[in-house]
Length: 74
Image 1 (cartoon, rainbow, N blue to C red):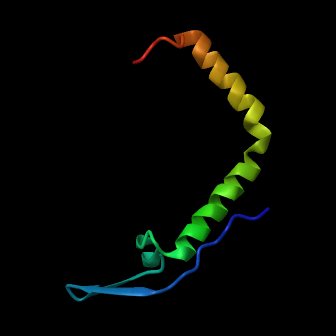
Image 2 (image 1 turned 60 degrees about the vertical axis):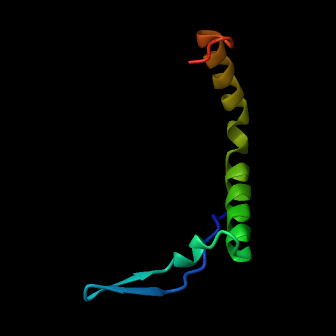
């Protein structure tokens, strides 16, 4: 499974005679349906590749609890 790739849309910013191109400026719009789809694809990707570590995650979590105790708040 390959990671999702965001679309690249050039956004030219000019300031003090300096020009920069930001290809991911479109990601600033949190209501953009394309951004929401991209984030969903990223989440699905990380869930898929981290499946094999779920048992290790549970084991480490339980070890942390055994060392610090569940009643500790700091």
